[in-house]
Image 1 (cartoon, helix red, strand yellow):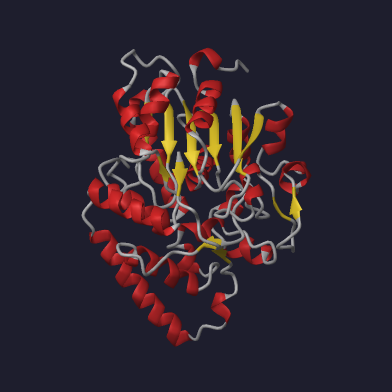
Image 2: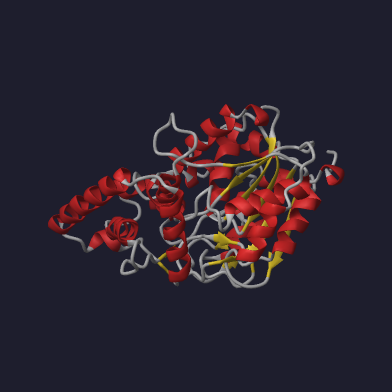
Length: 377
């Protein structure tokens, strides 16, 4: 299994202070036009696959791929036995899509076979009533749909699947884990049992990866992302239109982040007066939380976010480990409670973002999802 080699991230927090009102209005016009084009795109798997490959080649996005031979083998050797294990939900990362034939589809088949379980790879469609069949929307919405809306749509999709009615295990890839985490806090009905986060953006990011505007096929998405970023990450318009802005946690501007940021400050229960006890109780109900970090991750800054660590308040260089951080010691959203119950496992894979091996992923599946290995709590 491999991913695109991510580009160096960029900080966005200072952008709005030097933009004139005229330049902002021009950018807004550009963004609205680009978003309109994106909505009108035909939703075909072929188009989405081509764009995913271009994103991967350009070193952008969070695309999980299997080598062609591995993908073919996974599809040919599906388990024909009845799926008896706890069903599994998969959530892809930014720029990827649920029906990607070069990654998410064969990975889903491989997981289903090894866990002897039903697997549902969630698509995020633009219309609330559309629960599948929206490949290009699913792909672009990873950039241009807010995290709140993605979580809401994820909840609609899993609730509508009768095979998930008694609960499910979940595995996410990169940003997909942020969606799953949001679902656990805000919905968790049906409930998530074990949650495996593959290089997930757990505690947010302090930099957003650049998007290659000049690569054929990426113009609409990347121009939209870059134009939005130029307006300033904590402006209301950007928070309403750029997913990555919703988990941008600037350690030097925490007051602004908590005041103007959407999504992450709320599920973290770090906005005074807006704490939600249900968010904590839902998170504490997990049977297992598995956090996997990429040792040389260049996509997620800091990479320690994947283990619920982050930069210390006020610093862009000094790190704080999960167990020393205030969100743990003060148990903002149930993290300490889970850990003290020995329900958190942490792993590190060598290499860059989403460049884990097939064998490693299968070891996680067999340890945490396979019926014979389920841990009784």
